[in-house]
Image (tube, rainbow, N blue to C red; front, side, top):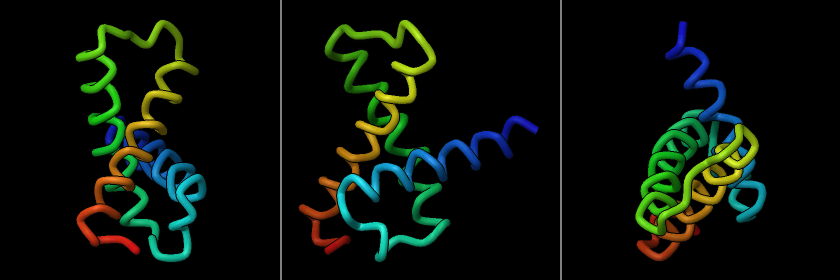
Length: 82
């Protein structure tokens, strides 16, 4: 059951990041899920390297969305997304 929740939350996080970065039209549901999950891991890795922790659930979601935004920036830099 937890993997279903992971897919749903990953999709929402990826969708929010794609809306912020204005790449929503290019990305489908599968891309949103992948960007949301990998971006969340990236966000928590960067936050941990900076010495930050998610003290609350909302802070965790914010770190996840910012990580997904960072992943989209990286993908745009590599010309994977326009």
